Every structure is written in C-alpha cells, then in structure tokens.
Image 1: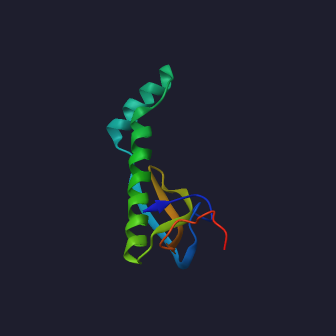
Image 2: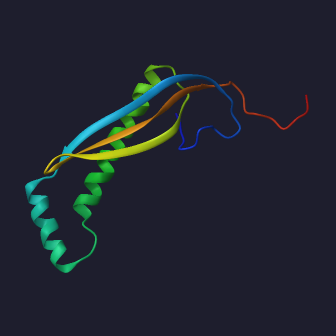
Image 3: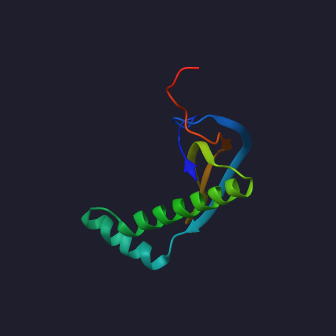
Length: 113
C-alpha cells in the first residue's frame, strides 16, 4: 500500500477516488510509566516511555487506516495526515486519515504520443 502526504503519487495516475479513510485509536498513559516520566522531568532528557507510547499509537492508527483502504480496493492513500486530540486527562486520540485511491496499472512513462 502506497501512503503519501502529497495529493498525487509520482509516476502514477489516479484512476478513481474511493473516499476518505481513517484509522482511530485512543490510548491512555500507564500510572507507573507516569511516575518514571515525572522522575525524568526532574533531571531532563527524552521521556522514552511517552515516545514509545506515541509511536505505537500512530502505528496502530496508520494500520487501521490502511486496512480500511484495502477493504475498499485501494492501491494507495493520498493526502495522508495525523491528527491528535485529548479525550480525557490521561488519554489521547490519534487519527490517521487520507483519501483512498485506485491507481492506473502502469507507471507513467516519458515517451511521446
């Protein structure tokens, strides 16, 4: 599955647009990881626990978006973006979204017509 942030796929022609696809997940922080993160705040540096949580959450949202695109028969998702929002004090939602498209069967050539 091709996933791009641009509105087109270089070298390919969009045959049809299949509509908006999205993948959503909501994750909450773990109380023990919060304690370790608070300790890290005292000394500075990257809070690896949160970095890992955010990366896993984005991957899950992305996987869900791709699954929806595949279910619609898409070859690619264009205009891909992430959006986040706080759902509760210790929980955040991550949404991966874009437009599912079906591409032509061949790469665009540079020959003359």
